[in-house]
Image: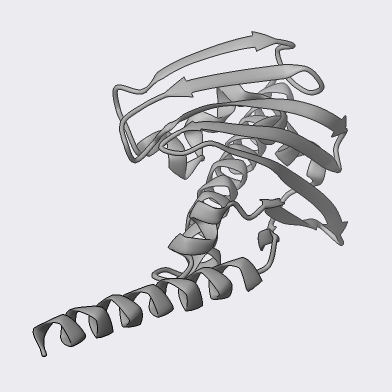
Length: 198
């Protein structure tokens, strides 16, 4: 009786693993996550915040995951060929970013390679589309869905998880750009008033 019970449990477990494996393999082999926001500024004012990795510290949500994160820059100062390497805690992970396409002031494409907490090779893209006196900024990331990602997708919604970070980053970018625009306008007005008095 006990032997039959053990055999039955083994069969059920094996069958469950097979079903799970089949389900995971049936999941999409690629993914894309995208979020957008309207910023009250022209694309030429927003583009430098994206095309220069040095300026990501002011708005990227990933910069806040580890205060002691090691960072280094190489290649171009900004735009095509600019490279950024980071190595942080388990939340921040480690990897490299390289701008592989830059069309000022409308598009930035980034090759994104993760080395930890797991290996991944994706492409991030920013598009800036002017609309009257504002700009629609979209941030997307796409790539192949590894077995690990497919498995993780059983327990969490990757679109919501990554998309939430994008939403935070875009809101912060909006605040930074619009704040800079406001400061610039104020300084310009002060300069005009000074010249008028002179």
